[in-house]
Length: 287
Length: 287
Image 1 (cartoon, rainbow over the protein chains, first blue to last red):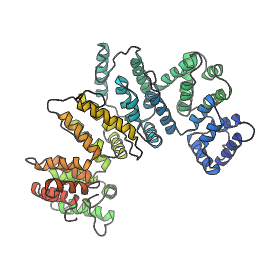
Image 2 (cartoon, each protein chain N blue to C red):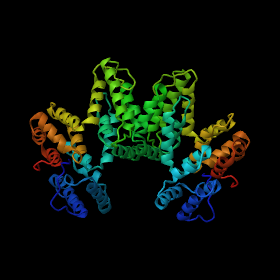
Image 3 (cartoon, chains in turn yellow, brown):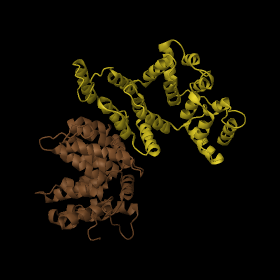
Image 4 (cartoon, rainbow over the protein chains, first blue to last red):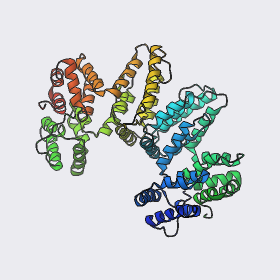
């Protein structure tokens, strides 16, 4: 379900590092070369490249990329190159710092990663930010949003096959009753209407993320692309976090829903190296 | 800080299994032999014994112990033999099922284990009970207790050395103000007085567990022992969960506070094989 494509024969890690070094050197940066390497390596390969690059040149690859690139292209390359857990920690930290009630990134990370991935992200958060994710979320949020987000980012969901259907049905029944009665202050639901219905929106999105993440991500992409001026932040986030996971399904869902393939929508809305990197990650020309 | 004592030369795992098998066979069970082996092996050794016993005799060691032993002695041996993470999962599950507002076991497990140990317990909980610990805690608790316990059992606390003292001080100031004002409904504190002040009690115990666990455990032991009839549940839990961790400090604290050594207090309050097992675990005759 990943959209990554790989060269017929993958060069050695040492060769990749050498080529990247070459791309940074000389007159101007060779963005095409950077894309041709990094956009076509999986997480394990990118991790090795980072390690080897640091050992060989005594310089952090991310710092080098940060120095050479700029704007949206820089952000997509940096986010992509990061290890998934570190990327999630970075995105989550950023989201706590600029948290508003319409920011759904924390919920998205908490609900669309597996229990184990979320845990790795929380460990990466400790390592990088010297505090716990739930602590930062509690600090930066308030009210109903805090009540929803703190447990979400702290959860370690059971993902096995054995489900207690009796319990699930009784819980579904309670939720149905509370929603019918609009008893939104019910503890297990806690859905007070706020002026902009933003809490209701994040609650709906939470359910979507937990049940059909591809529909949630399709919608984030749709809103990001249809927006006047494009929301590059959302576009970059979804592409870098999903390319290796379920981007194929998200692309299908996007096409079905918008009657235009995602790559064509991206071509219309973006340009330059940023566009090229996005297209490479979503497997443009592949299919 | 562990109170475990080991034989001068530890027998091989195969020998241990053979001796245990012998202790179960023949006329009556040889409780002394069981104690002399299991009470003097650390968690890694006990895990190996369990594995080897199952491989050699095609029978689960815990089931064999369950068949041969009874009452308090059975419980202390079974809890002790379990892997620490499995033991915590078992104790936490039991606590959710018989949860009352005076039951502090969930808080104790959440707050006195390291982040990593708590995580292992949550993984063991998935494996054994096919659901998540936080789900069960939310299901069995309500009100302020739920608001306190769900985040506690879900937490993955940062345990590094770098602490943001500015933030810590500002949080301490807020708490101090709220407590002075008796503003117990403050969100970060949430300390409504309930008829029996049980919520206040668990909140105090939480702070104690997080800051000086040995004082918390000393108090649990003191109350368990001073009680008319002894609270064997609490006594067994503290001894089995702390023997390998910080029982030495807890013993010192107990002696300081009660002017009687813990082993002497246990001798006065318990008897038989149960007494012998507890004494073996807290390093009686050692010192």
